[in-house]
Amino acid sequence: MQYRQVPEEPGTTTARTVPTGDVDLAATLGAVAWLPGDPTVRVGASRFERATWTPEGPGTVVVTWDGGSARVEAHGDGAGWLLERAPRLLGCEDDVTGFDPATPPLRDLWRRHRRRRIARTGTLWHDLACLVVQQRVSRADAADQWRRLVTAHGSPAPGIPGLWVPPAPEVVGRLSTPKLHLTGLERRRAQTLVTAAVALARHQDLADSDVAAGTAALRSVPGVGPWTTGCLAALTWGDRDAVIPGDSGIPSLVAWVLAGRRRADDAAMLELLEPHRPHRYRVLGLVMASGRRPPRHGPRGRSEDITRL
Image (cartoon, rainbow, N blue to C red; front, side):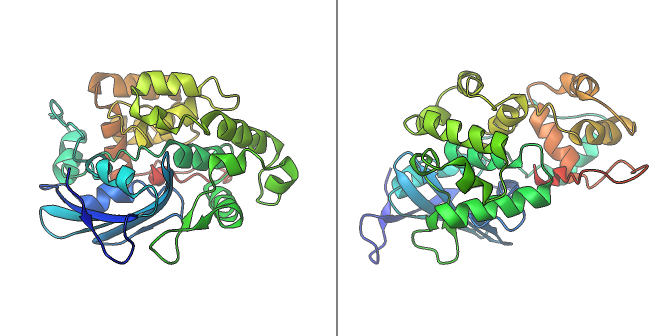
């Protein structure tokens, strides 16, 4: 694979052009940003920027596009790692073979969003840390706590002003619970985050393994359960058949869009998704993209916004 060296930062900045065909990069890459105001990512109409932590160190990836190709530029120690995996991130390796829903509403949703693909980040530590912060709290609280964690313990992104790289697992693994309390994390999530950091300090390349083996290994980390590994299967591995159990809003959304039912649990959601194997996460993405939400009844409780997936 040939990289073009950019002279201002020899050895740490590289670029390549990736053919993308008719992939809707705005929709595909926009799905990577799960929290509002995330200091690690910026998404525009034709530009995507993300600062992350790779097995080779910190790196920033910048994607710009116009037509059927994208220019991917990467900065920092992780630049080569990011460029090598760029087609995965852009959804170019997402296989839609066999997905052709014949009846509404999926048929109509697929016609409208058929250029949307599933991105595969490969950035296991970044994704896991962000998801641990999101466990059992509202989206607004998670966004605030993630921002505080990243800006307090991370570092400025290489090559792109204004973005932040999440703290390395080695850094988080040394943080005390009181220090993590300052970011808003209570003891349970703080302990999960530290334990996960220690476990992944030397195993970030686990994301290059099979998704089933990788997520099974992660479930041995205390505090990392089916919701977290389901999200990782979708985001980190780009698994087109991933499901996300244990979420308070997703089952009812799936039931409302696919069957017109206002309430559902995990079992009902899985039953509705079962006919669509091996594309269950693709169906979930179309349900999210539909913009349809079940009507609310009664007092408003915990705030959930599952459009982030």
